[in-house]
Image (cartoon, rainbow, N blue to C red; front, side, top):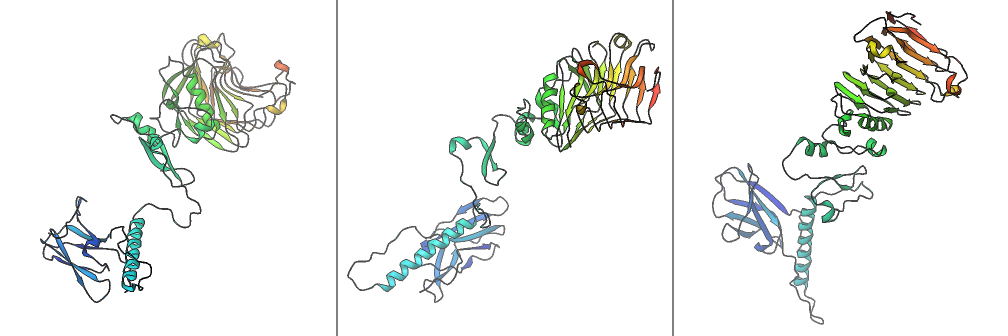
Length: 431
């Protein structure tokens, strides 16, 4: 008496003509099986009843025997019949001390233990489990309270974790966004909590995640500064077309040892009270490329500049513009682009290795006899910068190179400044 086969489940397709099926599974009793009939199209299965829906007859010479199943009716094509070894999890043998060794009963009990092991293995093979190559997987589910109304997933180590809570009610862009665009690692590192998860983080973090309105009136400074912090953690950013109002200083931090981008084509930055439309810092051995942003300085006579590269390195401004009206430039000390040291007392903090490419200035309206003082103002020892293929209009000086004496500066001028391929229209002095 041995169990020579590891088979514990067999399946057969119904064909509308056969009602007898071979069951090459060893078992002692016909009650040691569960029989399922599953409709292939719908996946709906039912458990058949012994004696009503089918019969099982022992066949062959093995002990325990194999079986043959006969269904009461002939099932049409389109279903699958499964016969599963499923003995009761009980021990019916009783061994009395001092009696003769009951070899048959002992063998039967051992065989039933093997059958239970086969059933258990069948269930394990159909379950989610970690491969043996995983040394120490943590696949225990969190408590019911922790995982209630959440989305089951896996963390960065491949262990079981629960994520964003499921949102009750009607699906919306915001509720779906909580799953598609949860708080990103860069936002966590920057201590920035998004207020609208419906906007994406890939391939770019959208500024509308942070309360951006973009109507040209509402102050978007906070949203800009949150995006600036996230960019500083190595994320690229995106701002939509149209007007945005900035009423306090916006700082964009370029990451170190990593280069990212800010895509701002069509973004029109209006300022009221901000010294610069965009103050850019950081970038050591990394950097930032800003594409397509414009400073629309129509009303802010306090603004000193549009884009201020403040002691930053490896910054590229591509196709960015400063636009102004004559009523502003006649009374303001305004420069569309500024490169200056982060610390005016330390020449080594200059804005190094930056590029201003295909950018420019223009006057929106008014008397063209009024000029902006500078298109680009290079202050102090801001070395190894490149100003190329730009168009500067309505500027007293297209590119101004100025020693920085105010604020404790040493008065040193920059060096290695490459100025090439630029157009100067209506400027008093090109350079």
